[in-house]
Image (cartoon, rainbow over all chains, first blue to last red; front, side):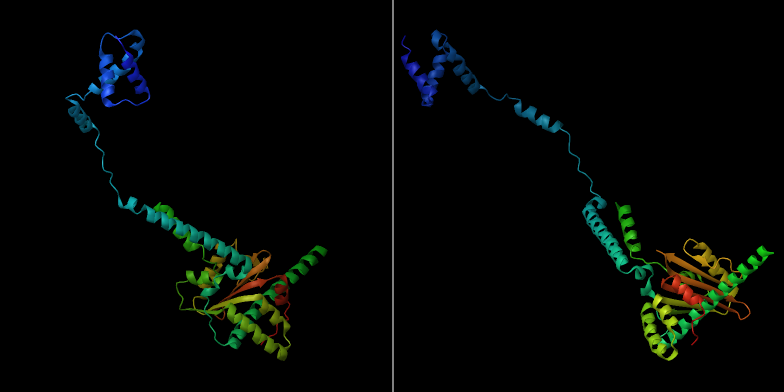
Length: 171
Length: 165
């Protein structure tokens, strides 16, 4: 038997030039039992291809697939609380609060550096009792006099005490 | 998260708050404010006083007052002629409560009815408080100065060179 035609078809098959009909001829040829030994290595290729073409889904495929889908765990819907919903808002507010706090801290520290005294006391809350500077001056002078008098008395007391101690020591 | 937020808000509220002078603290604690007179001379008014003093300096030749005023930032004076002893006791208690802040000037003074306390920061007297009780006249007085007072200020004040108006 001349297998030249089959060899030509094979050659064209490797070069991907065969038509569907020619490939069917090749499959038919290799499905036979009597094949020359030098063509035997190609038998497996064409017979498997034939088997793959014959492969079909089993009758109960749909049923099995559907049953598998149904047995899968149902995904529970997560409850979203108001706290969770408002979380981005909280985060935004927290960020702003942090920025404001840090800003305030920085500002107050700068102020302290510049105006140590002014930042020490809350002078903004002071309401002047006098509109006339002269009256206010008299009041402050009087207060200064009182403190001055008290300080002078203290110094005098100290001097007297020191002198009496010195006298006692001498005796 | 909410707790952290609350903490932050409270912190930011307290951060800008400034210190209080002795008179402010005393007034906060006093329930009977009707019997108390509080006079305040703010830093702005104090600046004007320096100008007034400059005008008077030419007439009186009083340099001490000018120097003393230049060191003061504010003055607050409390006077009361009712419940004097009770108020004096309250003021003394407040000083005692803040003994880390206020140090007595002239420790060994026998006159417990007239006391001076100072609050120092960075070796500068930031606040001077004088408590005075005159039971015979039924007068209670608190004098509260704030500013940048130093030892020279105290020396000038105690030198007796301060001229009366």
